[in-house]
Length: 538
Image 1 (cartoon, helix red, strand yellow):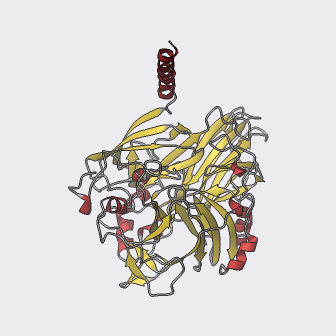
Image 2 (cartoon, helix red, strand yellow):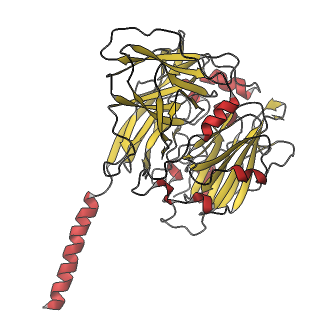
Image 3 (cartoon, rainbow, N blue to C red):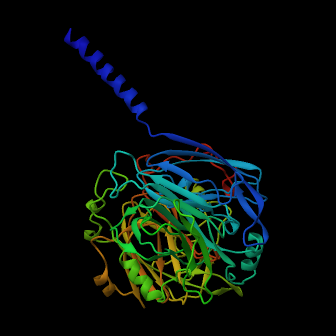
């Protein structure tokens, strides 16, 4: 009696658990996007832009932590095309990263279905084209990850939520810009600054209420300063990190970066300027929008508020005030500060120096003297199929070499679960910004001049925030710490798109030789094959 009862009980419990597991699976969201050309008069001149489902900028993706996104992208352009998801970690899934090192581009009049999860993330992010100079024509948009209702956030729910995509803009066609870069010329100065693809926009709110503004710099090459006339901005989140909630009059946002602020409409009812203007440029370009109090008919008035008079030093000091909120949760129900990054000894130190050499008589951009070139076969496919000769793990040194600049398909080899220190050394007179796909990292230090090991004494090893893109000031350095817990082939790139296009990038191969689904997902069944991978079977 007892023996026969126990199996029935076990099977009954398993059946209930099975049902609950199926019901508990994270939701799936389905999208179909068609990418086409269109004509818009952005800066008073009709020009060709890239539309997604007829929209410029593209549709806003609002998802919840752990949602699964199934997105069928149809390419109706005359060139191969890819979309990348800026700041989405693609846990164990660099197959979906949407860059040329991981994916074959989608041919014209063809499609590819991305399948990825917003795993354990919250915050304000973006997407944009990663191929050629398509980003200069649009195709970008916002990707906002909302927290799960069971995870508390360290502020009251706002009364509204606005997304602002700010960035420089060029009147030149993306193919013209590409041809100019290919000929060895540098990027021209932009023609203007846009807010949500426009030179004019209005955001309406009620007096006394508090609104969230998600601000992302989706431009090609220029840092911006953001401010709202007469209003303080409370910084609450930076690229997935809840931060100490300081108040600011203005905030620098560098290329590829995203911030989230709260603004209380606590001023007399009228209209106020919202301003985004270029930073560190001789000619200052400005875009304005309007913050409209719903109970007012008074127009905007007074001078447009100016950007900070001070430059790089002021901006670096502001960056140092961005600090992790150690006691708040992020996407998971554990405090951000529960991972004590500052007590871990790095397994290696990598110093990356950017440069602008001439190679074969043409301007290129390089990392430690190596200017990256895209192969016809994505690195991830070459790695998976063991195709030799596609990339080299020996061409890029872990320290600046001082050698003559060369062209190579450079990959840096690392091991899964390494904990590395990376120093971005900028010996040029221009602003830089760097992004790492698949990860966020602790930004532990900024400094002027040359980095030396002694500079570690200035690191913030207690409450440095994590983010996916960091700025590096002219003739200065920025230091980050990275926990390499996400296996895959990951792009490390300049977010200044002309520099990325002309070689200031490489790939980080995070690897464990034991093939396991615990470390990395299998190759997708719908994978596109190109180059030397054509005809091979996953």
